[in-house]
Image (cartoon, rainbow, N blue to C red; front, side, top):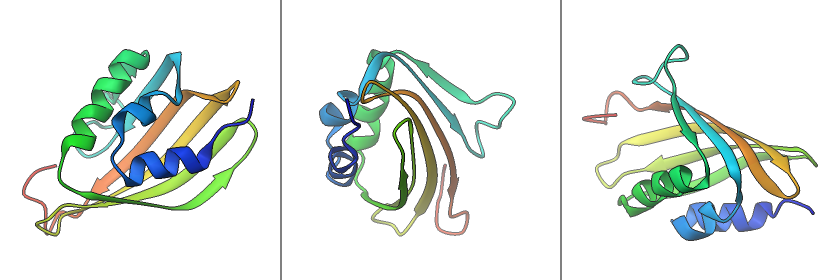
Length: 121
């Protein structure tokens, strides 16, 4: 089964948490590295339920999402997501997804906030 990247892009850009959660395998793992969660202690989410909760939180926030620079392979997808909050705060995320049977099994995000415009990160 092939991974549906257009579905992922549409779900991210329209803040559809349910569609996003449906792209993950039951045993998927998500790792997030950023200023507050460095490589030595990243955020780790295990299982589709935990990942779905994460996406519900993110998609409930008032911001725009844009996907670009995608590289799509049979077993891996990588892309860049740019988010902008109403106050002008920008977040840039580089994501790599490992795939199995058309579903995400490992998701790595490395992200950075615009320190000048963002009150918190």
